[in-house]
Image (cartoon, rainbow, N blue to C red):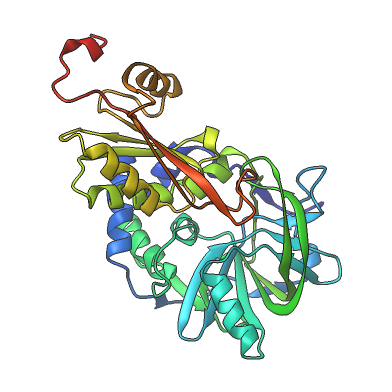
Length: 373
């Protein structure tokens, strides 16, 4: 769309994310875990988004040839209902009649939506595009339904920027970051339709039945607003999906008294389905505890490889070397069947999948034969 400012691949580089937060990799994990454990109350300030435009003025993109049409991909849904607040990101199909469809997974926003519809109401939402990175990351974090992810964003911002993240009310009377570039005020109706196809994070096309219709009411923008276009199945998509899950995996594994060093959701698994966890092994039970903690920390995880502290988990060849030289399939695998990710095209019709843990650690007191030096 001529004359509009669009930013693409803003957070495609992990190191750029760490620089924006003022942390290194280890500090990122520790800081994020602290933000989750110590959420901060919201502080109100003067809002930056004071102008108003029509949604047709936004440069919404049609990304891939087989997509159903134009999609908002970086919109953070902020909802308040029944005394709860929730942040979450959902792909949103936009039609030229002021309506669209939102792809809702059965999590917190879906609960709010169901409660509102059962009460004979529609669910009001404010969709934020162009917010501080801390708010964007928090919106992709899974925590208990009772926790407002905005308070995690507020805490993370205070820890990284050493000042308060200010919030202001949208025209839907919902608190959003005061410096948001774009705030779309909308409502989810009781009407449902087939949504998709859409190429999502796995690079495969996803189609969902019975997705809520969304009605766009107005769009508030800042004076010099920039539209954040998140291209699906790219490194930026991987980072914003996966990075907020790595601290939750780290936390759950550590709670099981495992000396965990690092965790990575791998790009080959779309930074969503596959993980590698590096530990300093103290007991032969550490493998089982690590696998259990990893699956607890990220419910959509499908495979986790556990490696020793001499393996570079950011080098896929090193990970494969560990698997090739330290793994035995008849005794180094844990397989379980439970609910998987709806983004995985191989899941069964009932939504379940086979999940696997792989033990690519060397035995304790194994001597020199497993070492490369």
